[in-house]
Length: 210
Image (cartoon, rainbow, N blue to C red; front, side, top):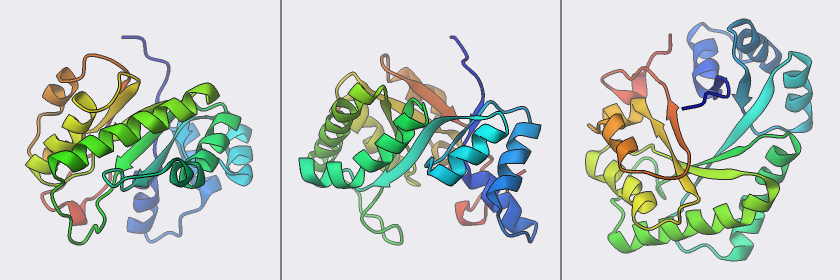
């Protein structure tokens, strides 16, 4: 395994600021990332954020986008929702577009049928094909809280997506869903595999960040 560097998403940092009673401030957060020795951040690199990141010697490794991927998406849907996001990432010289397979309703998630998981895999493959000319790779990021739902999302990649779709394993959410993140990675013998490190609490709605 070749390690290119260490990157972080922003969720934990923003929550840490809130827990400490501070209003999240991007310059402060990016400065803290640089002081921690990180090489890169995962953000939607709009002009202002990209300038701040680069001024601190950081780079943009990837971006994170949540979509309901298990419903049919037309090419026009993808071009409207994904391509502007991907274009900003490519301009920032990032490489990885991480897609969360969102439920239609986070407050009342419904288990996806096998047909819907197949659609999810097909949508992931379509997006991967569209952004590949920009130098971007697509990986699905797991966020299901129940075991069968998490395994279903995994199956949408391993069984129904093309080989250019990778997997970003969120260890915290895998733990909440009762899944073994190592076993999840072993189910995917091709394409990128990323590990998202997070400390889960017993109730995921009350997680603390350290």
